[in-house]
Image 1: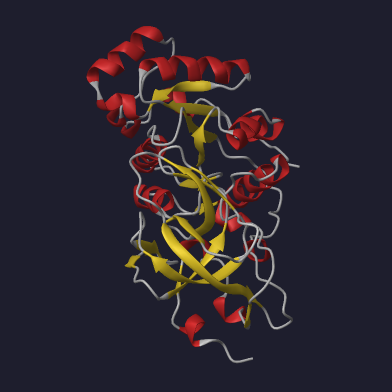
Image 2: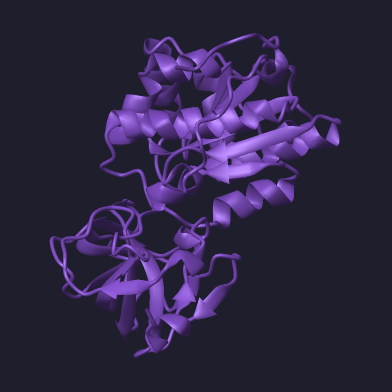
Length: 345
């Protein structure tokens, strides 16, 4: 079947980066979308996101009337948008610059209205079957014979400094001669965090899009554990010295809470660094993680940008507070876990 000119000229978003676009054969003009479905859409009105992050990471300017390829998905971002996959192929919103189409439910007061999209149709293969990101996820990993020490970074909320903390840990470890692999296990499809961890020296670096998810909001607990299993498993089989994992959003977010309470996470994670914006959040977060029986090595994050907030946290906590400079020097508390043999079911 001849591909529509709209498709041939379309910009493909970051969320589609694992899909071989040559597999697309047709545009399906009817149907109820589900999370992960690829959709060809026209930009109807520019709003909060005037640029689209492409599959190679470049942020390309958007123009009204042009066609783009994005993925349907849900979004949970207290500082930006709350959105869900719509019930039909009617007008919807670009709710993340990495390429998430959804129906906006709410937004932060600092946000503009989202960029508006007019779906042309779902994208299908030669059999007429709609193409979904799950079709292109990494295969189930082989069981690693040795499990590298694994550090997880979690936090109070969006923008608590989790990725900056993870990147500082990676940078410190690589400077010390360790080979580091990294992954973002949950979140909304966009490349900024992946590129930062890559720039810090981690290789390979994966995120949940490689496990077949445009975002992990409203995924089932089993889906979130699938993301952990696939990403951690593939990293472990490369036999790095250390694995660094970032878990998105805060402890009260549904998928994060379920993941942290799981036996699967406790099986693979040796230590946690908690990112917070202030001493109160740090104190509450450390207590919550300890109630789950998780090992907290220390606190870092946005609060360390303030000497006063850092001092408050040090006075209130019985674990270290790591500035970025501290993490660059690899605090001994991060490297206390021995290499061990595990099987992740």
